[in-house]
Image 1 (tube, one colour):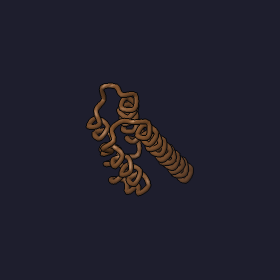
Image 2 (cartoon, rainbow, N blue to C red; image 1 turned 135 degrees about the vertical axis):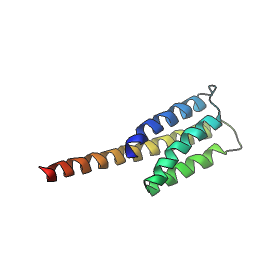
Image 3 (cartoon, rainbow, N blue to C red; image 1 turned 90 degrees about the vertical axis):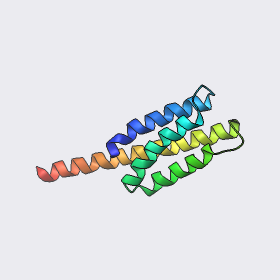
Image 4 (cartoon, one colour; image 1 turned 90 degrees about the horizontal axis):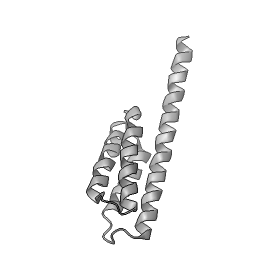
Length: 104
């Protein structure tokens, strides 16, 4: 499941980037991409990732529309999710290396 996170996050980043730049991406597209990331976070029991996704989802319900504050907050959410995914991938790589070392 951790291996699927980069792909899911890339889709979310693309949707969020388009939304920030006011391209054709709707909030629904962003919510759909976020749901994929959130499902992986829940399935793997990753509480920080689940919380970050919750904050992101709350932001998408912003009644004020797409303004500068929204854009900055959305970028902050994406940055946090990217940091969490990087940490998860690093942990997974360390576990694989440790198992390989123990098997040798």
